[in-house]
Image 1 (tube, rainbow, N blue to C red):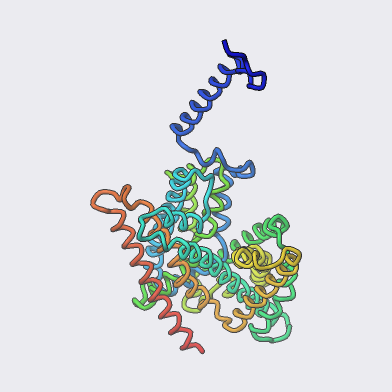
Image 2 (cartoon, helix red, strand yellow):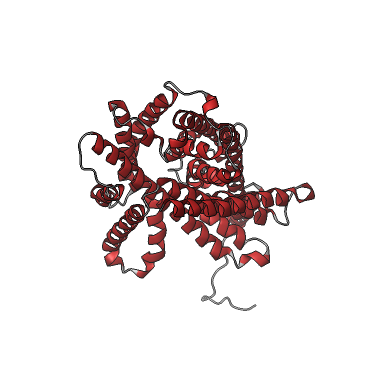
Length: 458
């Protein structure tokens, strides 16, 4: 018999072998069980994602009921009372549907790729990246388009805020014997507040400003509605329908007012039960029905009261010789000053993400401060150069919101469902083609008529 080599390792005990074998079996079983069980994105989201359905509804309503509600009388001026009411319902339905398909696509993509949540730009990028081979090369372009599109939408909204603030303070100043400066001068004066305010670089420090703004905003809208329903003229004194040339501007202004595509994904990503965002009734449906009804009522009442004299913000039409009306103008101006920093965060974030890797870490603080300063000066400079509130809203709605709010969600859903489920007789392709054509018509016609109006008023 051979001798045993003392240097050879002894065989492991039998019980150790059996324990190891059992562990491997259990690990394999658990792994296969996880593969069989569907992935639920909300189960893997951070603990901080704890927004209830009621809270999500409140956030969505707060985000949708911004400065746009005061612009709806201008939209009705371009369409007429009857066409405006019907058109608001139609555009509200289209906006709700495009938001619905974007969120549905994002939720299904999260399940497929096993990701807890995705933003707008991430959803579009990953859909194209994992889509049919011919479209995969466009994934980086789509991500950049979504990123910069959202940035420009929010930067444009900031321009609108500057003009509203400037015109509001100009009216109040002239009424009470202040300097009779131009709107341009008052736009420049907003920098006194906006420059230090926009240096706040953490969202948590902006929460108190947002909370104060919400209460003040409700009061300002209430006062504006009061003046609209006080001694209104007869319906027969206003147009029920205008010429066809007014429809593009109606669509552009309505899209600017109603489309909240930039805030939808962040709200859905913070929900405890994201499945309740959609469905019937669902957070989205309740919010969009409420918004559409309120916007239609304000647009109808505002145009009925002020007719063709209606301005881009309803508060600018309020009487200049009544303290209550003046207080509403000051309230709206203060709200927009406080909200500017929050809206400005989006374009800053996009720019900083593209420049951060080029700046040494030790200089990040100075770079952030510099970018915020330059961004604030640029936005106020644009508002000063073209202090026409109506033109800002029409151009933003025509170009950016037609693409970001209508076209891109429709194209993204089509790419995602290509080769999977396009519905009977390709109804998804047919439906989304109509949405894309509608967005193209709205964009081209809106830009043409906006530029025409701009040239006429220069």
